[in-house]
Length: 106
Image (cartoon, rainbow, N blue to C red):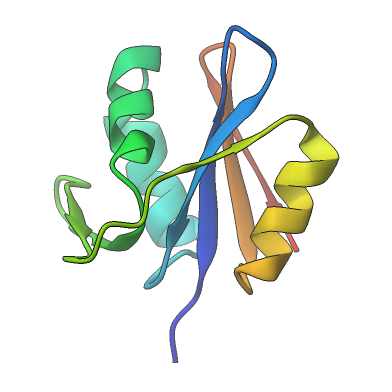
């Protein structure tokens, strides 16, 4: 079974850019890799903007994207972001906001 997650960034416009992560979305893996490898806005936004992610490499946190195009979602509010994550069957939601990562179990 996979541990699904949603990865999002709060943009300077106040909305959220979000994408789906299919495998290993639990904090000890995805959370650790996001904090270790995605600590600035531009790098994090680039990760999310490419769309749905199959998995993050266990060493470097490099993403393996799905072949089919699945663009990142733009959500106007945090409530809409949580609803998006639940619709993806995500078990965790990771948000990069003001240079910090937070996560919540859904």
